Each structure stands twice: as structure tokens, then as C-alpha cells.
Length: 115
Image (cartoon, rainbow, N blue to C red; front, side):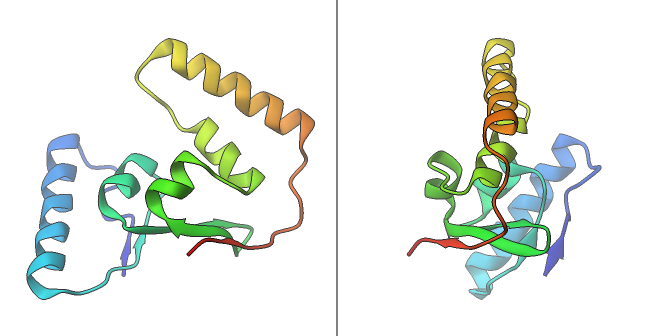
């Protein structure tokens, strides 16, 4: 289990840690539960992802599918709140997040699982 192993690190050190984890996984063939709030890091490292809200898994599946086509409203909000480098894209995401927040109160936690 790796709980936020790259948080509060500069980008260079973060990249080295991620490369070390990838290399260990490849060489030793082990699975790793990687806990992170940094979706860019999750996208780089994880084959599968589980999104948790209020202590419950609300969505899980292949990383690319969950991050590009989320099913659960909380996952939509999480992705809309993540910062991006392009200011125009950031404005669009912020506006989408506001609309989601105003129009769609979160349902009780339930799991959306993909194969």
C-alpha cells in the first residue's frame, strides 16, 4: 500500500518515485494499492481506479474509462475540480463543476462498478 507517496514532492522527485514504483511492479509482478488525490498521477500509474466518497467506493473500473467517462455524480465533480494547465479549459471545468453542484445534489453513496 502506498498512501500519497508523491504528495508535497517537486515534479522531478515525484517522477522518480513513480518510475521506481512502475519498475518494481514490472520486475516483481506485484499489485499496489496506490492512494492519491492527484488524478494526473493516478492516470499515469493505475490500471484500475476506485473513487471513494464518504468512506464508500462509488465508482470503480479501468482507469481510462472512469476518468474519461465517469458514471457517478461525485466522480464528475472530482474531475471537474481538478486543475488543468489551459486557462480556458480550467474555466470550462469550473463552470461544469458549478452546474453539477447546483443542479445535481449527490445521491447516497452507491457503487458504480465496471468490468
